[in-house]
Image (cartoon, rainbow over all chains, first blue to last red; front, side, top):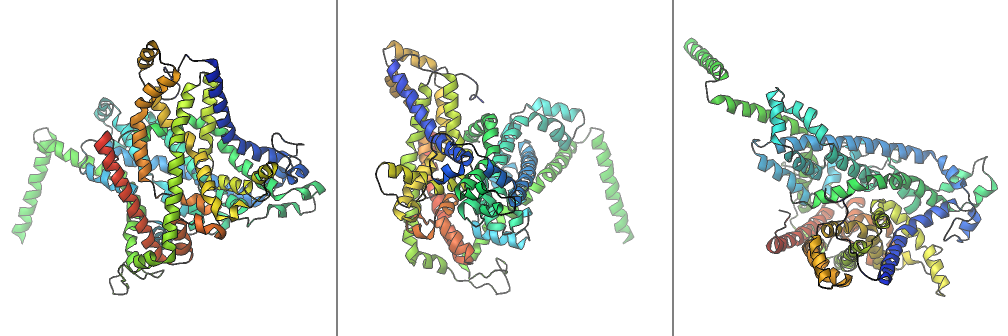
Length: 303
Length: 332
């Protein structure tokens, strides 16, 4: 949208150097506040276990040591939950994009009977919901409880996504749709051959929001998915770093374990697993950032 | 009988004829017929989505009837054979008269109020600060850094916070450095509001500044030029041009922040709290999860849920009405 690459014409060009310096220092300290916790976790995870145990690491890693990562690589449960998360992310993203398009297209057609009522049908659940317990009982009744489907199916439709795509579809020139009808296309063909290819920008926004949302989500697994084998990554992380019901140190007590590994503190292992599971988000985030901002701008538009 | 059949056949013939006529572009009914066919097609396209929304959004809404029953697991939400035990407002009254009610309500309100009071103006100041930076690369870097915490999972943030405030965590080491005695912050209820507020602001301030930044970008540059001609320095420009120009945005976001005054972040609290600090950390959402879902008190849990939703919606409704009156912007 209008945000993004366009240069801000309102940059203030005058003023004393001293004030500038103060502003830059302020901005730097904001950066420090936001980034230092991550930096701290990273340097703790790669420092020498002795130094970590003595809590001597603040500004730079002391004595590089990657043993904690080697140890985590051996954690089969983590890999299993990583795989589960990938399944949830891929299926969820595909389904969210598909349902957004299927739900949005008919609502963008002007002569649909009862369009107003269907839009209301969509809007109401955005403000009212049954809450935690009726949903929990419903999942039980549908037989979804404690299966992978309980993560995939209820999250397959995003009402807000539908509304965003609909707004986008309505902005597509009528002439384009009419020319397709003259060529003998029906609605389904028009949707898949013309509308979807030109909606890639909005679908990218939806896909990226969904990916990050599912990657970070843990609560529905906590409520609906007691089976640890089906847990997503964040739920495994929850058991390790919050609930502390998984002891990573057990991993080191096999024959191959060296003396240094025994020195590894719990905190270093926890930080390593935090880094390892968050890296995909941190690395891809700068590339995705513009889509996120686009999403905010779209969300703020009056529907 | 035979006559009737003949008549029917005749009718069918007539209809066929009419159809043939309309297809050879005579009758008026052709566009209408096409429209019906079109509509059926369109409804079929969105049917899966509508069914999904009906099942996963509307059935739970209907499920709130169990708040007025003594529901036991396994029975239907509403049975018509008389097995449903209706109890009226019993669960609501029990909750209002329970010793926990005041504490839960207070904690929920206090935590969201702190976040509102301290968290609302920081994104505005941050947007103003960003706007004063001249170096494009540095500016971009600061923005990117400030949005980052928003994308980090709650579980990760909670894990980090818990380890930082531990007795042997970095926070206590800093305290020791300044000559104070280390203390376990996660077992003392008096620190939880601060921990919650600081973490929530840290996670969201950069992200919340995006809308302000974008409305700053759309200010007419000639306004600044005119101000400079009149001899305004950068603070005067900030005060007399930037702030008034983003005032509508500030106002709208203020109203909706007020609308969210009973929305403590249940998910995050659930991750960082523990029984030792329930006194300040237990909010309505966590109570419903613990006492309603985990302990199996489905009916009373649902009743508490309804109570909160009603208050939340009431606040949002008031906020929306005010917003529509004064700024033309409304959710509905």
